[in-house]
Length: 110
Image 1: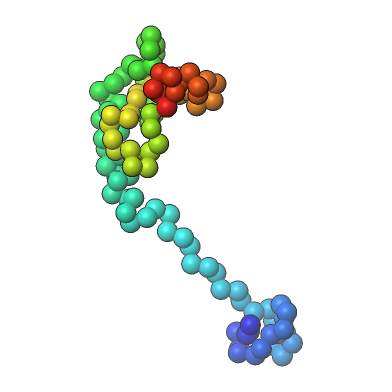
Image 2: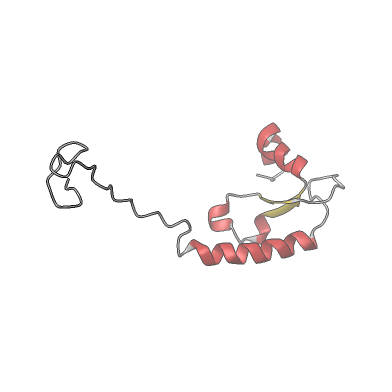
């Protein structure tokens, strides 16, 4: 490693300049891939429309207002597949994923 003046540095200190060399900051990772960005933009628009059209929780026998968009199949290739979407209340969304996933799979909610 070299210091800012080009001296060879051993360890973490330049004994010629009596300074610590500046460490190069790593280039930040791209937060969203170029491929995924348009899919997420479409998802935001279509997901909002879906929730507007489905204001009541779609979990069987529930009459609460829907609050969240649940994916019955993994999002990846199904991110914008409306056939895998389900508008549900927060209580049932938690129930599906954390309380009774086995029951949810039997009902095709997962």
